[in-house]
Amino acid sequence: MQFWDRLKGLPSPPLSWRRPSTTQSDTSEKQLFRVTHPFHPLHGQQFEMIEYYQCWGENRVFFLDSSGQLQRLPASWTDVIGEDPFVTVAAGRSPLRVEDLLRLVDLLDRLQVGEEV
Image (cartoon, rainbow, N blue to C red):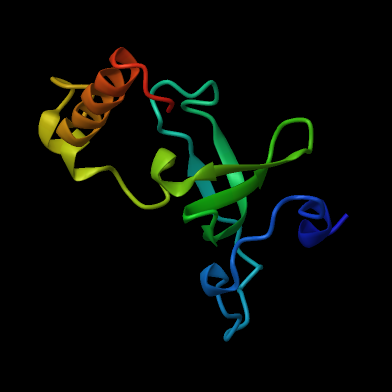
């Protein structure tokens, strides 16, 4: 089964997000990546990247899991784009970024007053 056949039935990203195919991909060399998100169940595991492109609002990597099923992850949860500068500077002292903590505070405030989220 081809990669694109596996995407049938999934919602299509808007046309403005689709990457134009202007150059031939070099498929002769496998590109491996590792899942780096500390709380993801696949953390530390390595996979062969099938495709990398922007869809559903962010860059994602597509790969086949151990059972051969097509999976996708945000590229930021992998070593494809390198380590987050905050993670490097924090050096393990803070697992959460200030931006994420502020979003959490906002969410908790809205929940406390009974707003739908």
